[in-house]
Image (cartoon, chains in turn red, green):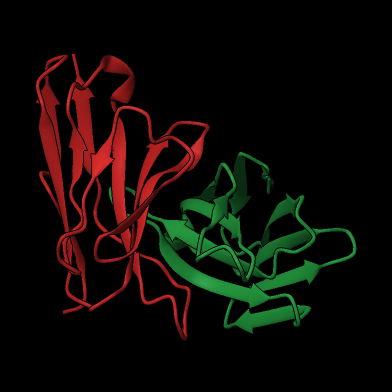
Amino acid sequence: EAQVTQNPRYLITVTGKKLTVTCSQNMNHEYMSWYRQDPGLGLRQIYYSMNVEVTDKGDVPEGYKVSRKEKRNFPLILESPSPNQTSLYFCASSSGQVSYEQYFGPGTRLTVT
Amino acid sequence: GENVEQHPSTLSVQEGDSAVIKCTYSDSASNYFPWYKQELGKGPQLIIDIRSNVGEKKDQRIAVTLNKTAKHFSLHITETQPEDSAVYFCAASRWDSNYQLIWGAGTKLIIKP
């Protein structure tokens, strides 16, 4: 089954404790992206990647890091989480060729206390 | 840069009636306009999209219209059903933007029985 998976789905952590949210897709997509979703603000892009070893900042990259060492994986790293990073996070992927459709993962609910 | 405004933020309609959600965009070079549906607890999913060389596109009960002159596009859902209850996002993109989508803030659609 074609899908984007994220782990963990729910995470409660404390300020300053480094964490990684994993994202994996099995569709051989070149494009992957991370978004955060906050009430009234819609989806805001954090980082995106056009292919392996190619990443770029989105609209709200501060406090986040990403890497793309393999085509299927695109982890999101919060090296020193703060309460304002409490949000719902989505990973998405797209082939970016015939179709621009983005396939989203199920989301990760992060709470930073 | 591109900005996408979406209205209304919440829409409540009687089951069986029609629903219309409207979006305006600022960048006249935008040429791809998708609509995504987000059900509770899930990631957004593409339901319909339109390119700038087309004025209208239909898929069963849903349709999208595009007015390039006025820079707005709309989602129309006819004969609404309970399963249409969700949050709907519009987005805009341009051909040279590396698949980047600029998202509207979302519309919560409530179908009243």
